[in-house]
Length: 225
Image (tube, rainbow, N blue to C red):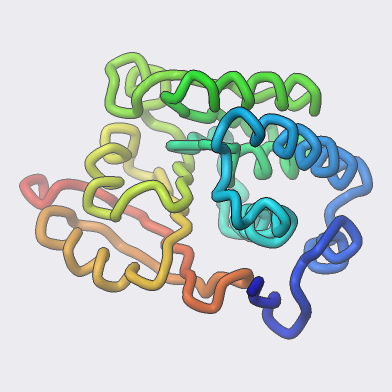
């Protein structure tokens, strides 16, 4: 069963999404196009868990949209790691397309060639200026392209200890990580502290009662502490 947003009901479509997040009509039209593309491609490429296909607006669009409020206003570049079907990165790009004055460059990193093809085609249909890197996150090509990015995002990608291994080479002193996590996040934080020094703030997910969003700053290996 899809859990409701705090103080409200589940996001079942564009009207509910608009009421919850207040995005523009243009953004909502892009999300509708995104939904159509996702349903079409899902027949051939496993972009989302099949059981969530009828809950796209809540489980994927709203879940990703809540990240926008946690991206610092000073951000000028975002890297979304392991984008899969585009969550949260492509949803953030749709939001930021309505704020051209912010000049935020969004890069989606997805090593699966079929998923990367979906992201490219969907971004083209949405007329969203995102860059798609069909490379492994740890590759030299990815690191050299993204090192020093302002904000790094990821959703349900890997435990924090492994995610930090992959993301740390991209972090500069002021880089912020915004990571959608599940109910195991406290344990993951404790395990990660064995090797990493970092500051973290946990925010309650508004789409999943057991979910949290970990906002990570000052990430560095403990050997450098």
